[in-house]
Every structure is written in C-alpha cells, then in structure tokens.
Length: 173
Image (cartoon, rainbow, N blue to C red; front, side, top):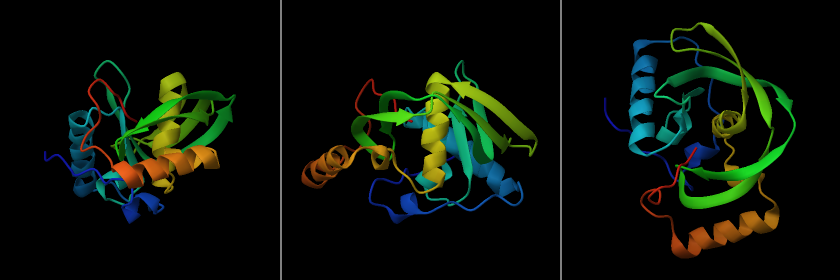
C-alpha cells in the first residue's frame, strides 16, 4: 500500500466539493487502505480523500486504540452545543488555531463494506468528523476563523511558507 501525497494549502482540489461514491469498488477499497497508511505515516488522526487528490466523499478516522473507521458519503445529521478547541491540519502543516465546532454530532455514512453507519460523537471525535467532512465540502479549518485571524495566517503562509511536515509531537486532523 503506497503512501499517498497529501495536498497542501493552495492546491485547488482542497476547495472542490467531493462527489458521492456511487459504488464501493476494489479501487475505492484500495484508496481506503492507502489513506489509512498515509494518515498514520503523516501522524494524523483523520484524513479526507480530497487531501490525497481524490474528489470522492471518503474519509478515514483513527477512533483510538488502533481502530480505524471508514466513512463513505458521510453526513452530519445532528449538531449539539458548541466548544472551541485547537485544530491543525495535514494540509496546513505547522498551522494551529482555535476553532468553534459543535460539541456533539451524529454522523450517517456507509462503512467500507457499504453497510449503513450512524454514529454519535463528542469531544475530539466530533471535532475530527466536522473537520474532515468540511474537507469533503471544500472548506478548510482556517475558513472557520474570524477574518483577522484567517488573514494573519494567510500572510504568515505567504511570507514563511509551510513546513514540509508536522512539527514533532503535533497531531493534526
């Protein structure tokens, strides 16, 4: 299973809305396996297909304890509460900011075998779902910031660029 190239801020695919997966083919299964390997290689805890250059509604999430879950055509069907927390992103290595997200969510999707999944999540898992589903909609976490903070980050990226990888000890969604 090859490690895929993670697309970085500025790549136009990160701004595209991903297409629904019509059928779970061997190619989609291979993509999922490659995404899992890529996510772990990059020290991430979630990865959307658009981040590896594939405009399909697929994401993988490290659910903790070595368990990886796949979500095909995921949709947030309920949101409750609000909480602010720090986020980073494999597509914006070295950039971190506090982002307001729903405290709890309910996600509906299909698993890698095509079975329906309905999952309630809170805390970090809820944040990961929201962050990764945003990717599938062409939204980056910096888009969720106020204009001043977002512009400050964009100026920093323009001036300094992005590091080649996440800083040591950092975890990105």
